Length: 114
Image (cartoon, rainbow, N blue to C red; front, side, top):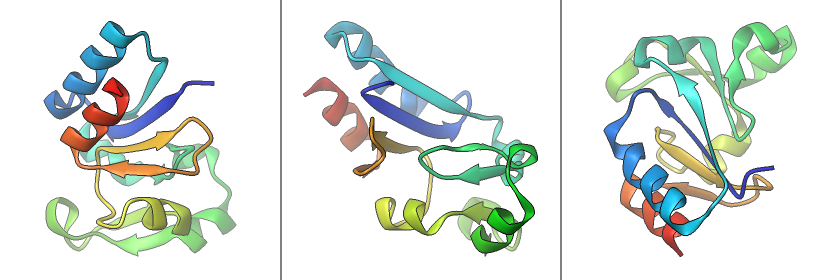
């Protein structure tokens, strides 16, 4: 299992700095995501994955209405994601066990570098 997992739209230049820091520091980093417009078809969570892999019950429990870049569109964010990511945005990073969330790309890069 990776030491750090990042969920984001891809490609995302903001994530590159964390990827570079991970390569230099020998940190096992996993990046998950899809093109920006495709994230509406993903479950936003530590275990982010396409909705095709998520049960109907889990989808219903995670349904939210997007703001900012996804304003007015249905998004699927778990309660755990929103606890770990107070702004509910991407990029979102997590410790390898999913217990610690890190938001904002510079904070993610610094956590990876440390």
